[in-house]
Amino acid sequence: SRDGRSLAFAADKGQGFDIYVIAANGGEPRRITSVDGDERWPSWTTDGRIIFSQRQHGRWRLSAVPAAGGAVTPLFSDTAADDEREGRVSPDGKRIAYISDRQSDDGDVDLWIADLSPGPRDRVNRTRVARVRGLEGFPSWSPDATRLAFFAVREGLPSVWVASIDDLAG
Image (cartoon, rainbow, N blue to C red):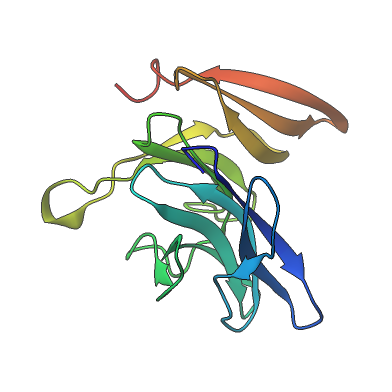
């Protein structure tokens, strides 16, 4: 969590992966999601929500839930047909980096960032960070939220790449 007092994680106790929260100093984990399908890759927001990827019917979709538990809601209203996974909220809480097949005719996935605060008429500002044939995954923000490191496989070779975010999304 942002205050360092809690950890969020995904665990499968026989019914598919759910998101749990536990105090950083130990104790009993508390399940905060129990919807059908799998939930993975939790990331805390600055306003006390946990964003995660939820898979139902074969597609991953970014969703959010209050850290105390409650109703699970889609993070974005316009991405029901997109595969969205491995979301990471930026340290300043303004954006999320994630992997998606958005705007892909052949199912290839790319690294995207999106503003967490919608613009006028609930329009979400998104930017594709990497559009290269291959595999991207596991984005990680720099502490100042100006760069993004991610795993990628290019021409069969796995490596870690870094992209400057300020050059992409002003």
